[in-house]
Length: 102
Image 1 (tube, rainbow, N blue to C red):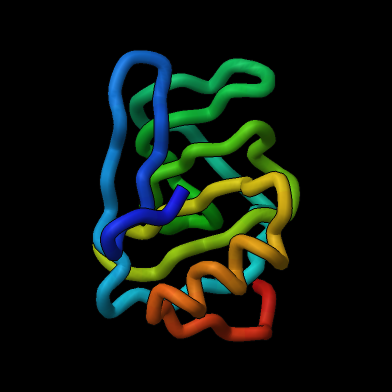
Image 2 (cartoon, one colour; image 1 turned 90 degrees about the vertical axis):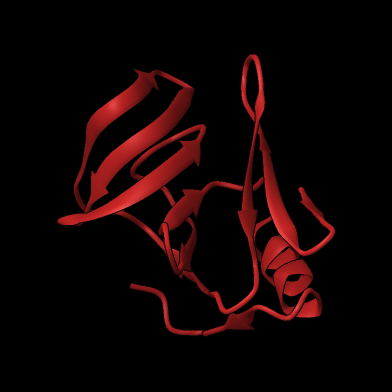
C-alpha cells in the first residue's frame, strides 16, 4: 500500500517501507530472477534478489509474472493485484510512471 509518501509492504512479521520520492515506476516481467537472501516459496517471494542481472528487493506472489519495478535505491519489484490501478496510485503520489515495460 501507499501511505505518507512511502510504499509500505506488509511481510509475515513486520513491514518494510520505501520512500517514493525521486522514483520511477514501470510494468515489468522478469526474465530471470535469483534469490540472494530472503524467502522464495511458491506464492511468497520476499527479500533480496537478482532480477534480470541487477539487484532488487522483491515482494511478490509470483516471480516471473508482470508486476511493477520501482527504480531507485533500492530497486523494488512488486506484484500488485491491480497493476494499472497501482501505477495510477503511484502517479498520484508523485512517482514518474513510464509506459514502456521491460
